[in-house]
Length: 493
Ligand code: ADP
Ligand code: ZN
Image (cartoon, rainbow, N blue to C red):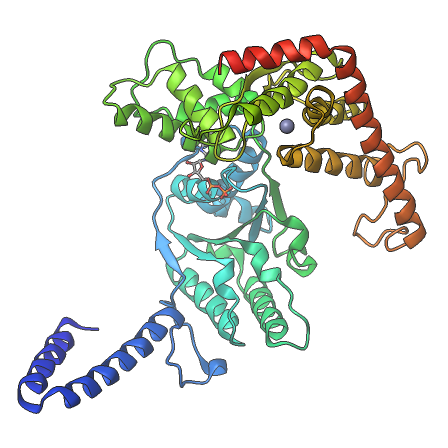
């Protein structure tokens, strides 16, 4: 709404208020509010409520599409070296397309980046644009899928129109899998999905890569992407992003310490070792939290302990020292954690405990953290069995030392059960069933076979029970040590 219109309306209100009295004022107010709601609707959807949905046209300025000129380069992206190589090829296509065209190469139209959230897919798209020195036109996949049939398709049309007008450039579509949210065919969501995908296929087939537009799409659900999109000439380059390994994490941490004041004792290699499984986004968050913590107390430098504290807070939740837990409950919690810790020490295939604490945190009453030994890319049955036994260590200790069972074991039980299910149904590690995939959900031979599922279930129960019994067994034999650890924890909380 223009400022002028606002001014006139305000004047009108005052006029009415003074000369016509309250009734006229309130009815005008009601009309005003109504019009404003329509206006908000227009801003959100790009059309007025009364215009039929199917003729709504996004226009190249349709909401949800944004254009930027990223300054990011591949120096800002670390820890994903294999993916980086392939991404650099795309930069080269954009920069030197003549060289490829001269030898008759067909340039890729679409590059699909797949991997867990926070590993740097969006960052990489920006780096491609930054390195090639071209604008990036961005849109989230979820904004394609509208309640109204045709809006998604017209948004796609608008997206490509704008890209062609801006070329050379890249199109970046985040949450690409939400395009694949297939509703039931009868519902309007089903039709919407088909129209949107079809429009995307039409646009992808219709432009030639000689025009200098490359479509980058990101997803963390590769399995939900429509097959039709992956055919040659469409998204035929697929790049997988993995969680960074220890060296990758170190170099990512290095990037996110730029511009921060670090003290001499900071050792990023050690932090990297202690953060297996974390993504670039997690690490960036930890470094930022560390800086905030230091700033809050008026410190000038971030030291190693600040980063470690930020990491612990990120992984285990914030400490809640103010929570008052009575001595009896506290004792059971100490015994529970001592159970995990003792088993982690005693079991051959378990990494030793690195930190045990009974200070309550946001998500838990106590923690036992195992030191990440080596980076594991594959796990054995022995490892999984020991892992399950260690997980049941908490509950087993409650039973053995306090003759009780608490709800605090919920997460342990859930994790151990999931592990057992994967072992039986996916990894083929059950003695009874052998190496067979049960209910993989991919339409395999045994999917939906009731008898087989029942057998698998009883195998899972057997594994779970076995590990729990084993945990109880070991702890009973070492009850003295278990009690001693628990006392130490209570003592030095
Ligand atoms: P994704 O798109 O894969 O979900 P993002 O690219 O949005 O992840 O990552 C979010 C933020 O996390 C980035 O802006 C960056 O600060 C940090 N980050 C993620 N991965 C990396 C990486 N490989 N190198 C450096 N920083 C990273
Ligand atoms: Zn536990």
